[in-house]
View 1 (spheres, one colour):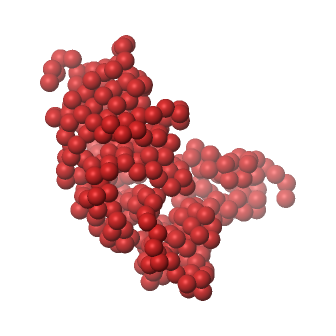
View 2: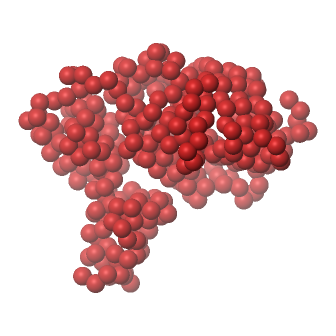
View 3: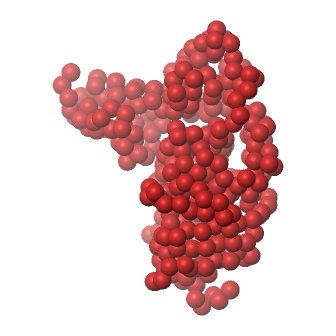
Length: 334
């Protein structure tokens, strides 16, 4: 690798400089990208003409790695990865254009790919923005076993790409957006001792539950048992509106399986349990806003009480849900 051609930088005011496990790099040559992600066997070729500009933000939380990268030119990458890790890639482009992974077309809006991390062959015909999530194989398998997802085996991994459930795609991207926002705006928050387990218990089950599986009779409860389980789950969620709660914890508290909760909520509400919990929290914030005096209420502080730590993402979620900004709800007369 020609180090002289590689231009990387970590400015003093770069995102995450208060947290040594958050690293930002900008580069003008692909060697800089290869150096950063440490894929020494990876071949990377620029496909479109013009000066290259790229950015990469890496976040390490425990043994999980989140790499956000953006490049303005088309690329072809091929080579080997790290077999001890599974790599999950999501594209942020909203354009109706196909990309290719292991020479198979993928849909940017809904496809998760790249998890066969022993081999790579990807083609992006234009500038690309994407996120790689690296999860140790043993860690992923442990969570898959807890969720009774025995279908996520070697055969699944060899396929290397899967179309996610539509609700799951949105939830994963929202989670990654909030994590990236925290890394840039509040990097020290991610250094708190409980964050490693919280992120793993939140994100990995969300990822797994968004991957469709073959339905069978074991996945469903009898209607009476399902109704009781959902009622108990709702009661547990209401008790945790201001406390962290993961799908795994919810299932353990109820003496249930995560898959039973997933299918019960999907069947009744059309959304996952964690999406339902988020909606309940948004509604709780709305009720508090309606009952508050504008001069005595700080929206960001109120939102953080219910687990919304990113003001911009909270505002976006709130407006999507209720058709108005939180500030508009607060200013309305009762």
